[in-house]
Length: 241
Image 1 (cartoon, rainbow, N blue to C red):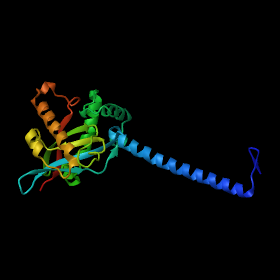
Image 2: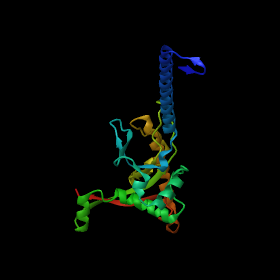
Image 3: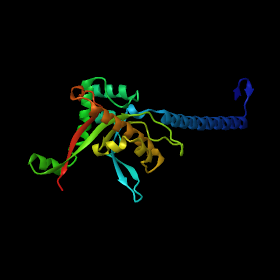
């Protein structure tokens, strides 16, 4: 056998084949490690706020030492923006605004904004089937006011564990009006504890939420609009106790 005018014996051929096989294996290993590295970098940098959404309910409880703790209940898991809002035109408006990370979201188009807020209302109302039946039959139900608003914040790093505070995504915040006065107080927010450091940004977001609701409440009715208010107050019915 000749290769580039050189005589290649059977023994040489076996060596060459072994070397080529080793090179191919090494190249495959390097390519695989490089692909894993690229995927990790891409995941760390990926901005999911325009592709996924999660619904979070916030509650505050007191510990034995009288300090308050923030608790978070996630309604189901995260959903894609398309599955949550369904309407392609609305999804386009939301993704375009969310990608700018405005904090509390308000869509520039008032029709789109109302549609987005209506989707929030539809998601969190009607969760109690018995209350719905009681309501249509005129039986007593318990009515609770809640506040709704979308948060589109940029992902941050929190000192301590070096991990992301949370995956950046659109968050539908559900807050009790009874908590607003406390959450608007910087001293209270500074003392409000969380289960772990990764939840601390939620306190900051709730503080901004409370301030925005107080601002809206101070406006005259003529300046309030469902097409512009980033926070809505709605009623959730539960079966009477």
